[in-house]
Amino acid sequence: MLDGIDVFRISGARMRQLAERQNVLSQNIANADTPHYRARDVKPFSFDSTLLRQQPGLASLRLASTRPGHIGQSIGAANVITDRANSYSEDPDGNTVNLEEQMVKQADVAKAYDLTTLVYKRGTALLRNAVGGR
Image (cartoon, rainbow, N blue to C red):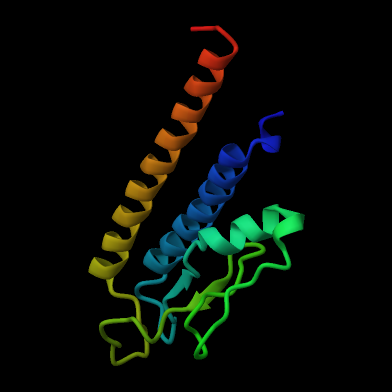
């Protein structure tokens, strides 16, 4: 029912992406001692691409990129990528998981999830006020 309202649709997509990222980060922590395990992460959420994907009439509006990687690609589902370029170190056994880095990323996910939840709650409160309820 609320999927027809953009703020709820985008908030839901953001929550699903954050849940997927939390899952990937948890897998990284679980494999911190696995030889040759490469830390992974989820591509960042792109508001523009999500909005364009959700609005079929706006699909023809695309931002021009002036160089490769300048504007992120759209996310259909959460895209899991190997996080080798951003890792701080590599263990002698080839493992790239840094526990401190993973914990910071999990704190970022928690903060972003709280913010998205707040947006969702405020949207429902606004909708409730619009129909005259408390």
